[in-house]
Length: 463
Image 1 (tube, helix red, strand yellow):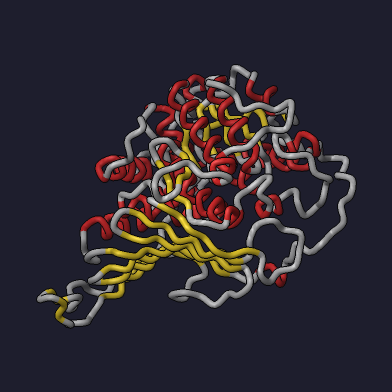
Image 2 (cartoon, one colour):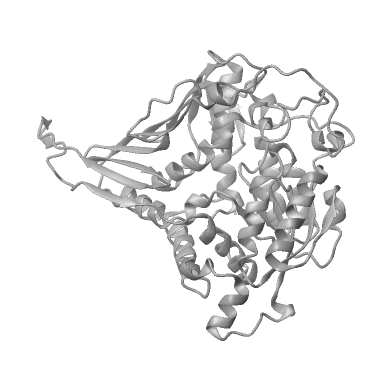
């Protein structure tokens, strides 16, 4: 289980995803309510014994979206929802009532939901600092899991989550839905085919200036709203005074709870680089950046440049929240720079730009129109990703965004943050999962940032 995913593995996952699209819940028909599909197709309602019963932990925007998409399948029903904010619970209950005419039980303590024997699957969409506790305990309770990215708050948690999924033999799908997009799969195959020539450099990026129009600012600490159990929201994270711009949504910009843009967004982009280049562990990571322009109460950076050395190529992640000047007319994306051409990719599609130089270098012609320009549109990603998960719940096959490979992608994102926070280049021992210097000696404080102490009484479960 510790082996890196191979090209054959990924093609198998891709084939499963594509097969799911054609197997009874095609995207075109999926917009029709399930009961209307049954009537139109002459199908009988799914017997109760074949239904999958879901519980939702974390009823914010992404959690509710994942649940609504799950309920597009007539084989799925929702029995319970859980959140530390009663407003979120009511919103999720209203979604299920609108979709199915039933109201799921609402809980503030996820352990009560996990204690229910009738729940087969748990969707987890909490803030990142809660992912490990809820996911591991769900596995121990015998539940399969659809888990939002990034898989954990830190690398130690990620490894513990992989161990839990494997030992408990649970199906765990991570919400990196780009893997299920057909145009992403095609782009990955184009890279693997050698069409672009030798790829020495890849780049991923996010650029925006949203914080000028929707700033965090410097609000004062205050009492939490009555609807929110703030102590439970903090959970294993350090004790801090409540601040509205540290909590819902904004938690992403504090290392107590999240991992900045690199973990929140680049995990999607970095993942495609890993898949296409068959590279799962960087040799080293260096990073520069910080809070250079935006004056607010955030902890994470408004500017970041992370440089990864992989065997045979370099990967760069660029983020800025201060200027929206685009690259390749995109505010986010993935670029593969090859000796024969360049591939630019995002959720809306991809473009290939051929190299046309005929310059001789030691007798080798570089470029010379070896490939044609190509443009492809985007493809659905989230819906086939949801389908793939429930197909795997039924078949017990490995889902397309499996926990083991996503731990490796997520670890790369965490390493960029570690390098930035430590202020020096870190080398990565992927077998031991520790940071070292160039000679392979463990280094501090980098290794202290691989995990953290939990706030009592919370503890990372042992499996």
